[in-house]
Length: 244
Image 1: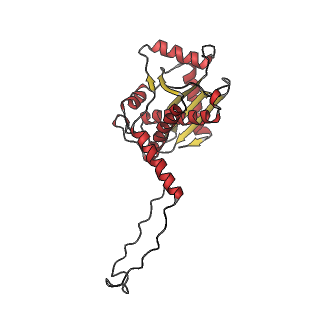
Image 2: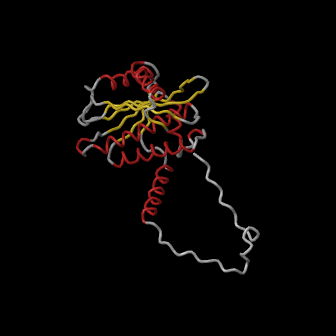
Image 3: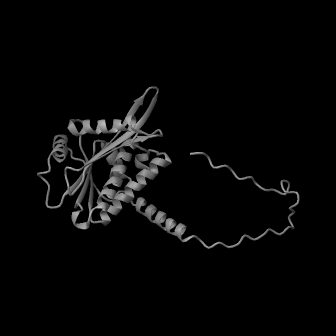
């Protein structure tokens, strides 16, 4: 983003025809734009939501084998689903090597409802330097945004009772769990990354407002799901599907 140019400072020396006794013209009063007022109200509301942190559930199973089994079952089968479908996503951030330049990417895959065979796949290229943990947090945040978008498309009777987002980044999930704001675990984020995380927290709030439970769940690295996520992330470099 180009820096905003500083406006010149007007002084008596720069405007010799203007003396201290010269009365300044009063600018006409302009009523505040209703659109701007609504934008300000929305931004104030979103800040209040963000300040409360992530209000959903975060599950980190101490039994890594059971966590892996559950994630693989969720990925490969729909036979265990209840009466109302679960909308499930897997989120992954990674470092992409490109010659002398290192960048980050993230990928999201998910099963939507009411059709469990309908898959969502998105890959993003992060154009600014971020800590690997932040890339993982961004992946979760983008998955929350996608979940909100998918749920908004559905009629009330078709909406899932629960949205589950799997992440293999335990530290990132712990950071989200322990934080009440976006300065997660004391790691500073670029402003662009902060905006993405804020949008994810707001999306989680709106999902809960739709009576959709939100859960972030850890699963260990490895397995078919992890391999698919890694391939999805690489699309960010090869095709630049989305840019953050």
